[in-house]
Image (cartoon, rainbow, N blue to C red; front, side, top):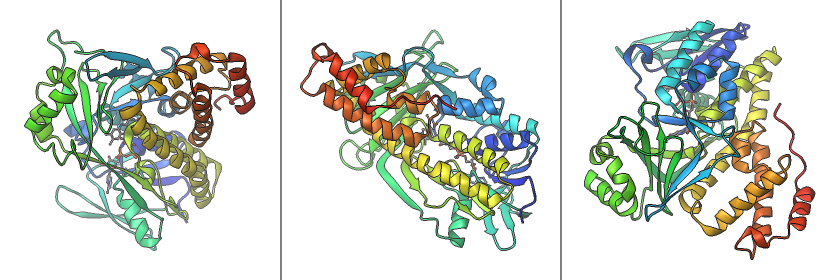
Length: 453
Ligand SMILES: Cc1cc2nc3c(=O)[nH]c(=O)nc-3n(C[C@H](O)[C@H](O)[C@H](O)COP(=O)(O)OP(=O)(O)OC[C@H]3O[C@@H](n4cnc5c(N)ncnc54)[C@H](O)[C@@H]3O)c2cc1C
């Protein structure tokens, strides 16, 4: 039997620290075990994606934990996508209707530090240099390894929560106990990060309040602003073909690719060769599981349960939403197994939906943002969103600015996309549309959307 209101969390990354806060604030006794050292003491050793897009779902969870103000103090607003065409022209495509519908670039390291602070203030006990090594589910005993001296430490647990990321050691231990139906689908594309430093005046060297995109068909670059006036550039390339990470393998080849395809970015990235050669190449994959928990003994959330490709900027946002959902279920059910089952039932279909939308968004970002049909559909989408704000909410907005279930956003998004394609077929501008018929089609096919709870 799990000790009432005590929980053991594996991983003090983004989800682990937030869940610890939410539970500790509700009076739970919480122990968190983290493989790495305390980043507040030894500096943040991230190793991947320096900044992240924070959206409404994530902000809502931060508000629940009382951490939104602190995080937002360092966040940079991104109003839309700044598309950089091959000929050097740029075009800002707004994400929402105005500045109330924007996303925010936050530094992964700073965010993690803030979350660790609020978790500790809320009363959670954080144990660093404790990497989960093995679990004996029969005896409710977990073994953690200290990376500094290799020593092993036994920890008795009632329930373990796996917030230990895409390579989750808890998931691996659970798989030895029970088949979770794990499948990993690699995208066949990887990424590399580069840096745009501040300009000569010390300020941002390109528009600060945008997510910059250089779409080039099978591949692309993006850049997100950091509050120290830099940008983190991410180059996404296929693993095979030309160009790919198989043909672009060193700094000189990276420069040649940039000079040909991302020419306006070249003067902005002075250390292109060095960044390309020194920074690791990150793999991209989607992780599917059919089961997220083993009765009352273990449950997974965040990337450990459903890692996704980063093209909707929702992995962390979804992980934060998981934390709120799990904390709620743990409050609702005295029976821990029932809480974990209810959590899985609620979140698994939604995780699947955002995983799918994230995959689709890659195609949209790299290949469609400069395509004429797409731009006409987007123009109609904006018009319909104004004419029918309660019925036609663009899918991007449902995912990013609202908190309705991802699965609902996915289903309505499919319906809306079909409508946009049908209504713009044979037209090159919105001027020739029959607006009475358009409005009637919207009213007939899209019931009003409920407000967020
Ligand atoms: C290139 C890229 C860009 C992204 N951009 C965005 C974005 O813009 N917006 C967004 O919302 N999401 C984004 N994401 C996704 C986001 O990074 C993840 O969804 C998020 O970090 C998941 O949080 P987590 O806490 O589940 O896992 P993690 O953040 O990976 O945290 C896991 C923690 O567990 C610890 N750990 C690992 N193994 C063990 C062990 N054995 N024992 C104990 N501790 C362990 C780790 O050290 C770490 O602290 C991006 C991801 C990538 C790769």
